[in-house]
Image (cartoon, rainbow, N blue to C red; front, top):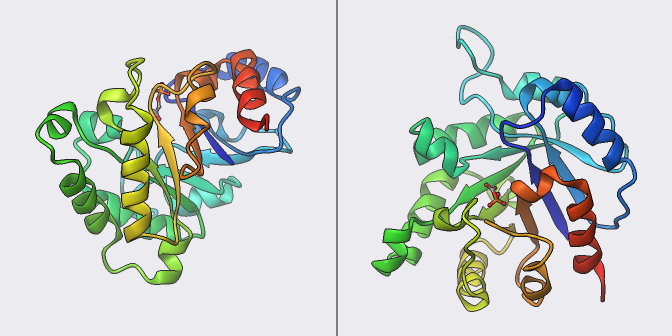
Length: 234
Ligand code: PGA
């Protein structure tokens, strides 16, 4: 199972170092990827976890104020990068054309993208989930080779489920994951949005899911350990 931890904009240096001490005691067999803030990336020191970033520039190095390139991430030992998180799509008006360019940059530097897709509440109510997700994936993945596609992890994160405490039914998640896998059978698919140490008891029944992208839960090592114990329990 893949567990990706998205810290978002949390933990200053001291907080991150003390969190990291707690995370050293974590007991798990899953494949865990931690995506701290850019400022904490070079403080990462957890042997059993892998390092990810929360975003990447769509350009290379150069005159791009405030950006961080795939090349620089690679140089800081980053292996994974979240691309197209809905908070960036909303707050930074990131489009799937931008996301496509970011995917290309990441792939050019052998970073594994965690590509986020997901519908709004209105799109679900209007029965547009399939149409929206297919369009997001087609735009993001256009012109990529089979080999490039194979290395992409897709995270299905319904926007209405992120940070809200509301999660879709098992049937709704299963339906979407299977739809994605029909179109992109080479990709691993994660579910993200309000996953916690309690609802994992139900979620783990879904054999179509290859792992989880965790926001709020990623900040709490004790709850994360409870989540992992439940997920890994047969
Ligand atoms: P959440 O966030 O787990 O806090 O809902 C998930 C995400 O934004 O990736």
